[in-house]
Length: 102
Image (cartoon, rainbow, N blue to C red; front, side, top):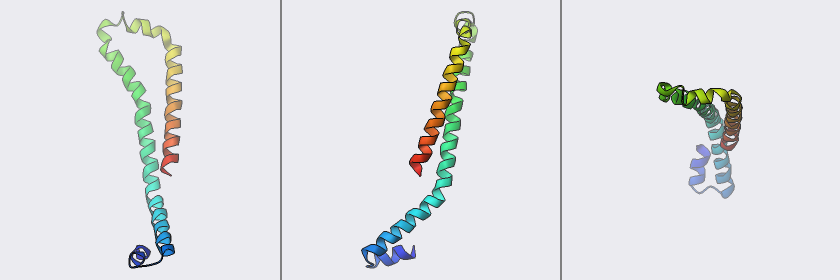
């Protein structure tokens, strides 16, 4: 802040650049943990969407269980592969998010 105030009063270009770099470094050190936490929480929410959607589908179709859910029960392997693929996608997304905010 002192360097930024000095740079604003007519300090040289080098002083302004140094002040800006110090401000960026300070902002990164303060914001990085918050942004990492935000990325982790977003990944947690997105990872749980698969289970929520699956549960919602079961609840909506519970009255016609034999027609719709009975057919889906035979695809346990497909659901497991889909869940695994989705979770890998979310982990990759969280990793990219963290790299982007750094």
